[in-house]
Every structure is written in C-alpha cells, then in structure tokens.
Image 1 (cartoon, one colour):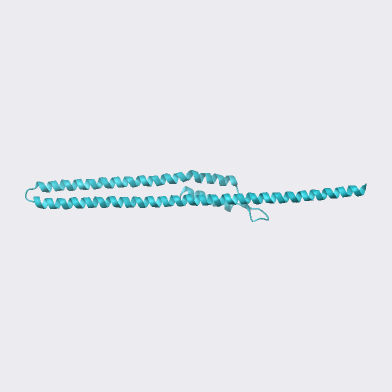
Image 2: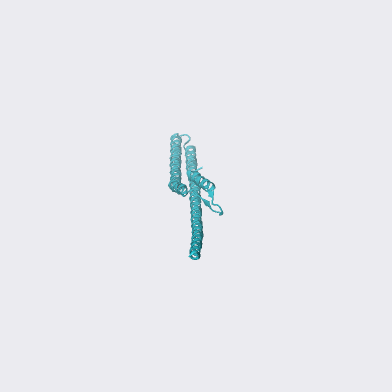
Length: 186
C-alpha cells in the first residue's frame, strides 16, 4: 500500500468521523485536518514519480547486463571458433561449428535483449498506469472533499442567515409590543 493510499484512507476516516449538524443532512468536518492530508498527498505524489523513474533506471540496467552477457557469449563463441580452426585435421568441421555457435550466440543474445526490453517495458507500463490511477484518485477525492466543504459552508451560512432573520423579527415584534404598551399607559 502506497503513502498516497494511506493518506486517502485517512481522508475517508476524517469524513467518517464528521459530526452531524442537527436538523440537517450536513456534517461538520475538521477543515485543517483535511487540508493537511491534501497537502501530504501532494507531497507524496512526487515520491510515486521517483519510484517510476527507479523502475526505468532498473530497466536500463537490465538491458546493459543483457548486452554485456550477449557480448561475452559472442566473445566465447569466437574464441571457440578460433580454437577449432587452429586444429588442422578438423578445420572444415570447426569452421561450421564456429559459424553455428556464433549464429546461436547472436540469436540467444538478441533474444535475451528482447526479453529484457519487453520485461522493462511491461514494468514501466504498469508503474505508469498505477501512478496515473493514484493521481486521478487523489484528484477526485480532493474535488469531492472541496465540494463537500463548500456545500457545508453554504448550508451553514444559510442557517445563520435564517436564525438572524428570525431573531430580528422577534426583536421587532417585542419592540412593537413594548411601544403599544407604552402608548396605552399614557
């Protein structure tokens, strides 16, 4: 599990722990905690990119090792071919075997390089896909949280506005009542 996955779970925990607002479908969340988690996600995203780069570097190392191994096989095949040619009695046989060994060595070297390239490409593709999925998931979660926070703020402001309107109406009614009582007493 990556750091980003852990942070996304933390974010879900914060949302799960949100307290309900009475008489509303809305919940109160710790905005600072959410902002901290989002910032941590942003900071960890480059780490995932570094891991993908390490995989690419590993691919290059595998390719270099395969090339070196192929070159060594070819070198050994050439040495064996020279030894066979050096023997007078079996020169023709040695030349044929040397050519065969050299062809097999070349083919084996090419095959090893191709396999290493295929494996490295697959690893890189998987890492890239996973990194992209993680970034997309983090962005989606961030958008969802921002929408939820904005909705909560709007609902809270409307609720405060309603409460202030009711309070002002009550104050006006009480003031009118006091004024009417004072007029009757005069």
